[in-house]
Image 1 (cartoon, rainbow, N blue to C red):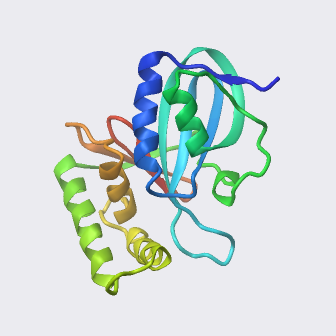
Image 2: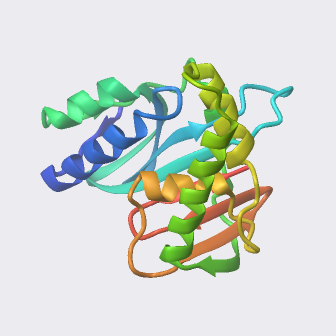
Length: 204
């Protein structure tokens, strides 16, 4: 029997909203990791497709407290997870088979060093600038593939002295992770993590 992601009603409702926003980006998969009472959900806003892809990997992550402790590490389809949570169901988490490339390289669990803070207003300004820069690269009536290439070329740019990228700023705004407090930026092992009130954006 597979381990179970079991959440209370409020946590399920919060994650449904998050998954609705995340469905606009990424590849439609979510990694679920737990070793105790808290589950971490991670999904890509954009991700490297392999060794020859030099574009950025930008992940969004949100922690959720479960009704009871569990241990799992698996990848599930975003639409199926969202539908199950919306219906109030618990979710079986399969073993990590068919894992996409982005989920095979995990950010460090520890060793994160603080490198700066960014005000919410500055994050919003950077996200708006990122959107303008993407639009400036697009021809009329671009296809999805063309838009994705333009986004990746902009989102990988460093946007702040802390090392936060344009893509992280865009992700924090798109996922509504900002609060009133500054975004905390930390770094470890080639990753930069931007932590808002309601979730994190990680870049590599």
